[in-house]
Every structure is written in structure tokens, then in C-alpha cells.
Length: 176
Image (cartoon, one colour):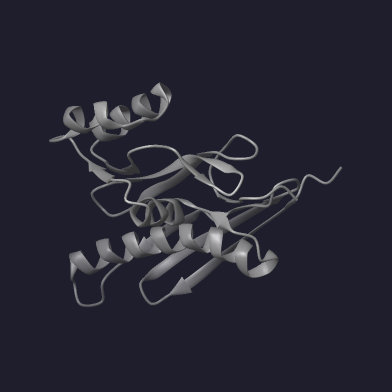
């Protein structure tokens, strides 16, 4: 039985050094591309640019998860970025939750209580959480995804649910 394949690579870019890790598993196609930014800086001393780079890197990395599955296998796939965009395209509200609005938005969320507890813990740690109001069904996949972003623009991009319950990465929406 194949357990899948893993790889990682350290890349050097204009804004700094970062590490990409990918994990492929059998069954439903899955792909996880965590990007660990080791060091980043602005050559012109512009802190906002560094934070924006972190945000763009995180959402792009999440998007690569679903787009690489689609590109390689011609199968619709989900990632946090895809889930957030899909929810908006379907008219489902997507919330940015922080310490100021946590208890106003929390009752509106139609997600599992453990996800709400996770959101509370992350917001209380100073993060902003971006999540659709409810779970989505995309193909045979059902679940939700969210991003938890810290003050530096660094974050976690998480999905849960699907064909095989999981807590990360991008997943195909059809069994393979």
C-alpha cells in the first residue's frame, strides 16, 4: 500500500527565504503545500510590504494546492483560497473575525463546535480568522476552510471535511 510521497525545498526569493513542503496521499487526491517563511525583509524598509508579501504567499500557497491538482488530474479541487472564493461566488458570507467582532459573528457560523472553539483560541491569541458562514458542498467534497492570520501576515490555511476527513491541504472533489 502506497503511503504517498513527500518532498520539501528551500527557495530563495526577492523577499526572503522560504521552505515549501508537499505531501501526496493515495485515495482522493490530496496535496499540502505549507510554506514556512524563514526570513523576509524589505530592501527599502517598508514594513507594510513585508506583511503584504506574507499574506500573498499564504493565499498563493493555498491556491497552488487546488490548482496543481486541477492542472495535473483535471479534477476540481479545494483549498482554503478556493473555498473562500467559492463561498463568495455562491453568495455565502465570508467573515473576517477578530477580537472586536468575535462574539457578534460566532453565533452566525454554521460549523462544528470544535471549529468555533479553534476560532476563539486563535482570535484570543491575536489572530484574524477568515471563514465562510457555513460548510460547502463542492462535487463530492463537503466541508469548510479558513485562514488564521497573525499581525505579521503569517498564517495557517486549513480545510476540514471532504471525501476522507482531513485537516489541511488541498483535496480533489472526486474519489480516485
